[in-house]
Length: 270
Image 1 (tube, helix red, strand yellow):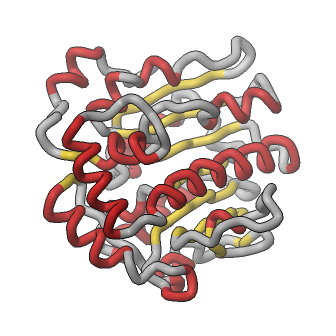
Image 2 (cartoon, one colour):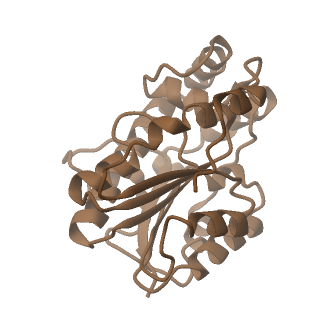
């Protein structure tokens, strides 16, 4: 059973007077589901940290490559996409079901405008299943309980956590969320994760000032992390090649990808 709210319920929680990450991110990748306040904050952040638009595009392209690889090369047929954001072209279910129409996908988000558009996500293939649940990443038990209505958690699942743990400000809490979710899925499951970084070798120093401006002018608050902390989210898992790298450099289709300060990796639960 879907946990998708009605448009009226989503609209009741929507605040168009404050920039919100889902809408600003949508603006950066050329989407239409955003407001003037999102443009203003998004343009200001991009002025401070111009590579942010490249990060947004690279993160989205990483999602496509990772889902195609897992569906086509590893036979994954179940995806739990936590913090899905606004629907755009080539959402997780579209990519997976293009490879295997029987794929089952559950999306998780709690952003009001995403809720309004959630039904757009629920148009998967007739052979598979696509569902959407309104839940917060800070509540993994609720996510797992509701996801189990659509996914068989006794069979491998690809857990997608792209650009979501950066909104869990305490690293210990973020690590515990991942641990609890991955403990609930069996051997052969995967963690697919991206996360912004301030590491200078990826050009991340500019994230610090840009995120400070964001936290003072938009919602929800965000943090970047270093390589060691991000790697710790994969404790107990085995990285697939090429390991933890700039998300643009994870199995790139372009031979000369731009390096962005956003780590990305895919790891398997042994």
